[in-house]
Length: 234
Image 1 (spheres, rainbow, N blue to C red):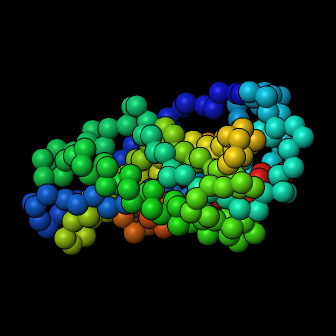
Image 2: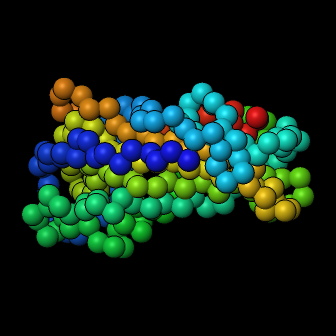
Image 3: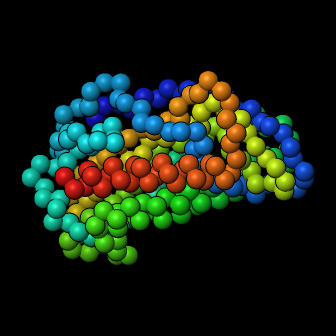
């Protein structure tokens, strides 16, 4: 499989200060606040990946399907909790000078929980709209879906504070979204989809806050979920 690019562009964040309280911030969901588009692969995808064959699929960088698989035979899906891994170079406290604004490990776990909940709600909704029955237990005749968000880098992490709290950013960040689909009975890998998404750098600074972040994150998950449905249909 080709290596998805690791360049980090536009990791510049400016704080538009207006903080009315010194009490410890509660982390609000911060996803992606600028328009996020697909970043194409730098090199052509490999023709195979662990026994799967490359299949061009609109809306994703890379999609691989096991030869001879009748994906149309699967009409129910079980979705595992999404795995979220932040980029190793991401430091949400890098530009923070106020100790009252420091993001704690507990805050990060809360962020991951909120992202996971939003991801599942949107992803399951799009699967259902695509004609799949989303089940609570994986059984015979079902696909077991394992989604993950890798190398997540958020430029503007917005703590929820009393009053007004905004950031100015040129781009929102980036992440690599991966979905693996297996036969629920045998565990055999049938489909793998990988897609790197990144914020488009603009020529001007844009206001970012917790509300716009949440809305944009859900929109990007929705777009990606629709592309995954197309890949699962074969």
